[in-house]
Length: 378
Image 1 (spheres, rainbow, N blue to C red):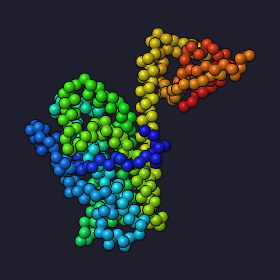
Image 2 (tube, rainbow, N blue to C red):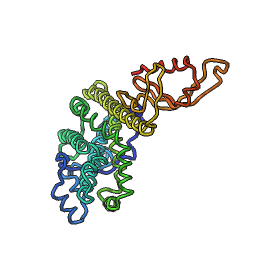
Image 3 (spheres, rainbow, N blue to C red):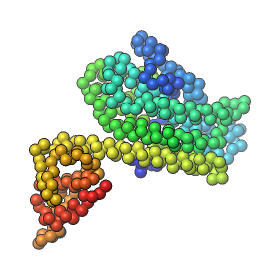
Image 4 (cartoon, rainbow, N blue to C red):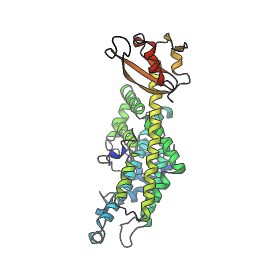
């Protein structure tokens, strides 16, 4: 997950047809209709998954806004106006897809695993971290978009023209909502690989789990969208917002009221993504440090240049891993100057630099002084 690449990421290929339900707000509750379907062994249908959003979802089935409008009306509009409405429609439609994906994760997989496979809630949480928080967050956002769509509905037609969308986006990606988004996506994206690996472990060793997944994957509501695919889609969703906002901006005149709000919203969502990316990187470094610690000989100890002894426990004692990777060192003194190269493992902490012990003995104190000059990096 990288904040530097989100502008390049395309939403093509990620349009899983979707709907949702108002019970997204009711965390940790299985509605009665869902329970009865599971008990009777019958299949949940789209209408039950969508709940109160069913009618709205049907209005968003068309491939684009242009396809929903009368051709005579479209001819009255400028090309930029049509394209702008198409992108706004795409924003609303893909948010619906996202909410539906989250609902499948919750109602079909998460609650199903606890009820049918009898997995503990803590176990399911490892596969779907922060799921209920994500549901609440995106249901609220989707509801705001739908409300705006209803406010601008054209008379004597099912069509709509949204002249202002930036205020909703600013509200979604600023203040408390932005803080919640940073928190929930920070944790969810950080644990993406761990969640998928844990899913694979369960699938490999638990036959009831295997049977459950096979059954759900064959249902029409899931449409063969497995748990790993759901996790990937949720991880990627946050990177789609700036792409959509930029496209709306491209077809919005600078003197229009919406332009300033859209520009602000674009900056806000980039800040959210940067914060999430930072949390992902921080989690990865902690995971890597734990891995290094577990692989280090518990009896190993060395004397640092300062005279202080450094043992295995010092790896995790009040230190933060900044960088880990291969490094090549060149001899800078003596008759072999510049001709001898040694590859070492380089670990940079907030207060210490560590290299492979076998390489330490090959270098003079002057060489180490220069290398250890980086030890005060924060």
